[in-house]
Image (cartoon, rainbow, N blue to C red; front, side, top):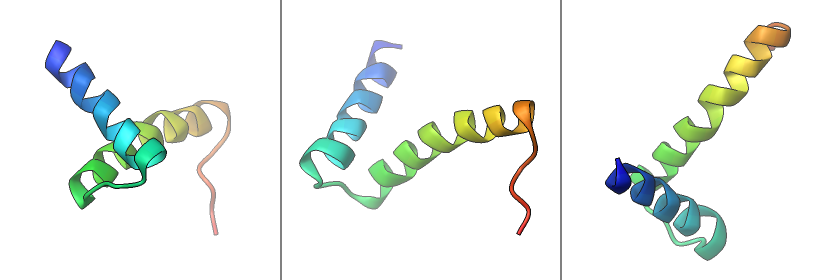
Length: 50
């Protein structure tokens, strides 16, 4: 569990702070941010329909 948290923190650091990240780190951060946001959108409303 400690390794998973450390990996997440380093990925966030590389993507947002340093700006030097690879595609795997970007994908992890994308999933880390979109899953809770989409869950909240689904709970309080509906998914955006275009």
